[in-house]
Image 1 (cartoon, rainbow, N blue to C red):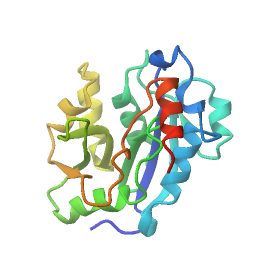
Image 2 (cartoon, helix red, strand yellow):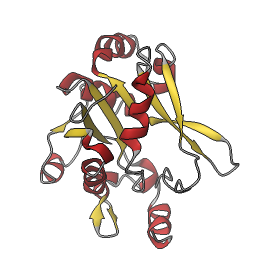
Image 3 (tube, helix red, strand yellow):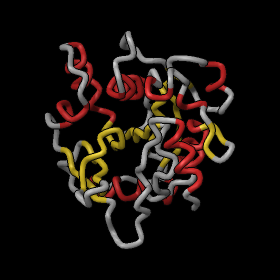
Length: 209
């Protein structure tokens, strides 16, 4: 069972922003607040006080990210190796027993995210809890950038990435991973809508609360 202050929240903002024309995605604004800062604030507001520490994974404009008040760590792997490089960076730095990863481009992720993922660890065999969210066709599918991980998985991930592995799901498949569905009555259907382009970002803003 996970208790208060046992989780560090990591905002993943290390991508190239290719579909935003190369813009640094985490610095684009959602309702007037930079996406990465917005994600930090939602992590601070997680129910149950489960998230006690915060970090940002970024590879550009580090000074701008540092201004948000959380430690900023670039990828330890070279050449924009993707979200799994952010996972590795977080596991290398985390000082709590668990690490919660969230991308910077999903501004509506729920405030009970940590609590619901943490419930999967009531089973002591669980090593990773991953979000399952409904998509446009109504099917619940894994959202692998939203993971709650045991910090002790660092050695496993180091070995996987050193062997050239870059796909999150191929690594998580090596561990006891529980998919936690976020399709219950009352769940926001846009909670895990990501904003890969500026048009998608503006559309999500206009959708309202």
